[in-house]
Length: 317
Image (cartoon, rainbow, N blue to C red; front, side, top):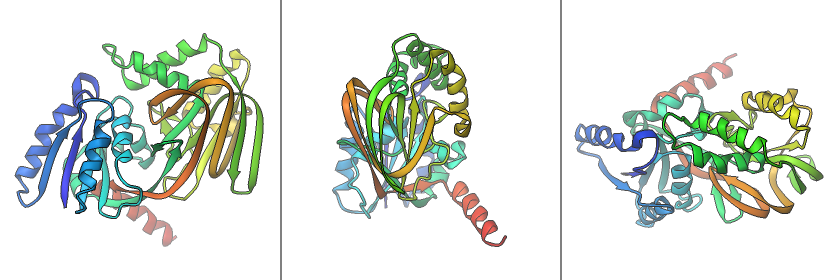
């Protein structure tokens, strides 16, 4: 198997991704029997292009997205859905790194050795129009926050979560809440909603926005998506709701509805911001659909062992 590291040289504070080069070279110097290559991205879409180039060669290959959630999303977009010869890994060194939070031990993904020796784990993904999301896609206030976050995250001393909080404050003082028509292919049958919503969320992972637990019940490989709908509320209530929302305390939020299903279509009265794993753009309509078993995602060896031990413990209860 070839090991291809797709490295975003500008990812993270002080270009943290570039610090990986020495660690990668050092590991493979100790394992000369393994084939590897480091490929640097040079702009938007480069990770997708590189991933596709490596996949079409047809042999067994593992692609390591070295950067933030955007680099991971771009890399995944270059992998043919269900490709049996391709594995996808991530070394999270961007500003948010939210997708790996779903698996519990974020730090385990920072070890080159742990990842090279890792285990393939089937994960679902989301069709978002013509884009692919591994994690979370949304429309509304949170997407507008994500768009503004890009403006703040490169400021000196501003972390990913801090940039998100600053962007929340920015959006808070502008008009929020849009009229939406929502159709959901829910587990228990079709669901339709019409009204003014702060935001609507389609989730395969649990975290986004630098640590906000937008979908605490989401499971990355169960063949279903978690849809979270938050109705428009008085502005004075928003800080309280966001506090609960960030912690994943959704059961305590009266204006929030959680529905599980396989697809959702949203139409808005006017263009609004849509967020797909950190990529933000304006649109009046969007569709979200589950892609079961889309990718073979690598869990670090130490984390895979912990998960297996926990599963074995449950079986023996």
